[in-house]
Length: 95
Image (cartoon, rainbow, N blue to C red):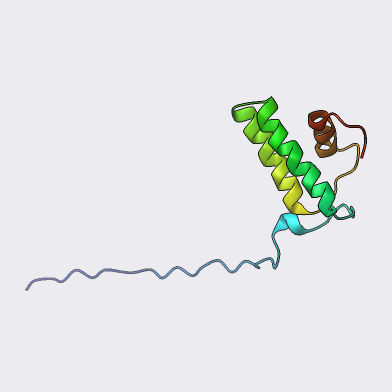
């Protein structure tokens, strides 16, 4: 008699991890004030300037970081990296 092959199919259950209701970047963990619309414009202007001043991959990385900062909606401290970078690119004093 001919034996039939039996295929064993394992059913994998998906991992049941809690799904966050908001993306992680949305949480304001530092208690910083929100970026005002004119501040977001300033950050985006600095991002465009980064591409002009540093053409190539460096400018793209700086611009991407600044666009992410503008999109997160929370202001970092004045002595923080984002604000120092913006002041450097735009050539203005403390905001």
